[in-house]
Amino acid sequence: MNSDYILDFTIPQGPTGPTGPSNGLSAYGTRYNATPQTINIALGGTSQVPLPTTGPNLSTSYTTANAITIEETGTYQIDYFLNSSVAVGTTVTFSVRNNNTNIPGTPISRVLTVGTNSLYTGSTIVNLSAGDIIDLAVSALVAVGLTLSTGTTASLSITKISA
Image 1 (cartoon, rainbow, N blue to C red):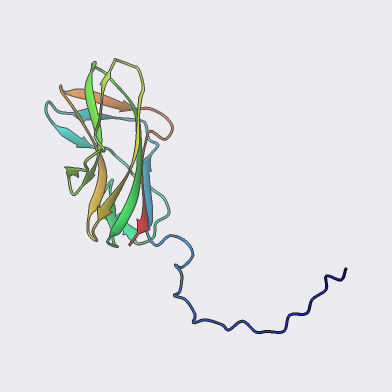
Image 2 (tube, one colour):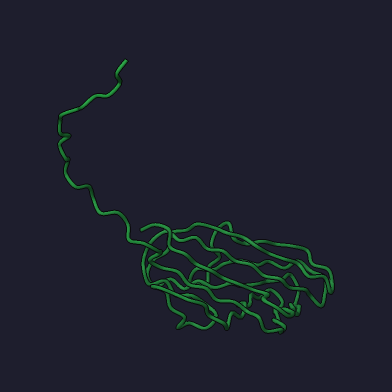
């Protein structure tokens, strides 16, 4: 049985589709802390987490100390962590802030014991606007020294995932 066939027809070409997204990400930024230090939190107060070291960025800026400024409106994934210990046992709350206001879903509260490191870590997806300033903050129920030891102890990374 012969299974060789010759097909003689042309398939018409359709219209060109829309251009896909460009390669790579359109906005991102990262800051972190690798310097041992103590953050003194006042009674009922909130303190910004120091993030003095910057990483690569695109369409974000580092003009505000310890924060990342958004330059393109869109939907962003925010990844964050803190590794710390306290001098006095108390509840410590760690959060990501947008323009000094906690981003819903990011505050993490833990009861810390003296001298024991505690790791706070999280990820969230939020809509951000150009000009928003994103940072990390800690607060406690009592006045306390929060110790950041050696190695990378705090980090904030922001990646735009959608317009």
